[in-house]
Image (cartoon, rainbow, N blue to C red; front, side):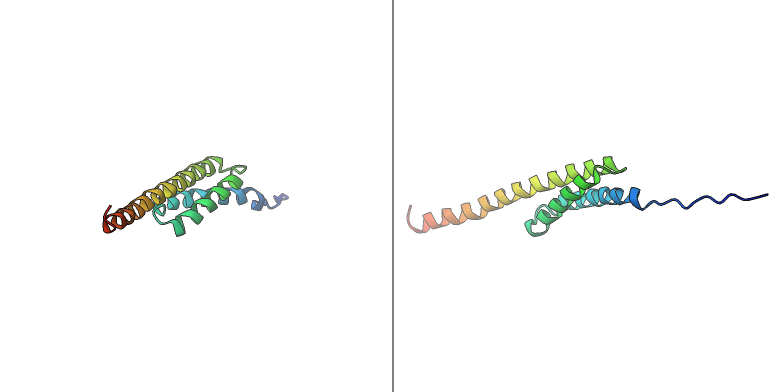
Length: 103
């Protein structure tokens, strides 16, 4: 009996995009947690969006889309938190300035 040897199957080309999709999903979740801190939430969200866009063409399309959505929500929350923070800090300091000047 002769044994037939199967040729090795290369999986390097099929999993590269799936890794990007997984990374996008993980970064999307982290961007939600880090959205209150602009110095780390912003870069995490942007990298998550880029990796999600690159991972959409892979087998992990659902994870890539989820990563894009979560990263976008994290970016929107980041902007909202910055607007609220600036309004509270600058608004109070402006009021204090007016009160000290007698207005």
